Length: 231
Image (cartoon, rainbow, N blue to C red):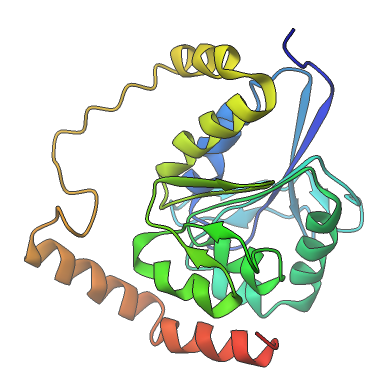
């Protein structure tokens, strides 16, 4: 019989989050059945996203003291989260007791900084993939990775794949397939440029320029932060 026990899902939301990192898996996980979903931040004020519209946190750090599933999305705001002691302490505290500790995209760096990926296989956005090792994780180049109770998704749209894989682990494959059908998840992109090995040189160069403009020296900064945290 499928498991229909109650589940609580807590998504960390923060300024400059990539909204699809959050809304993609939230759309899937909200359909697990008997499930509550919260967006958690320091306050319940609207939080700006990279898409130009805000998300509204439903609860604060003080109000959420446990969750069955912790999920940390990514985005250029991740660097500020890693250096925000209150946010990082909350992630660590919830992650230590959660049944599932999960992330999408560069949210894995937050889990890493919180000490929740040390000794685990994990993935993240391809542009930050090698940075997982700074926190003692084993980087794996896959769209999603499940290692014991750690589940991580690659970049942005991988969150839907990650969500379906996690749904299968929790509620069974039949229910995960039902969710896939209900959201008509049958991707057939018009271009084949979704990974660096498939993208042309000009597109790849353009992306790296964007990263450097939005988060200059990010790799070295992540490395320095990891060292400062004792990794």
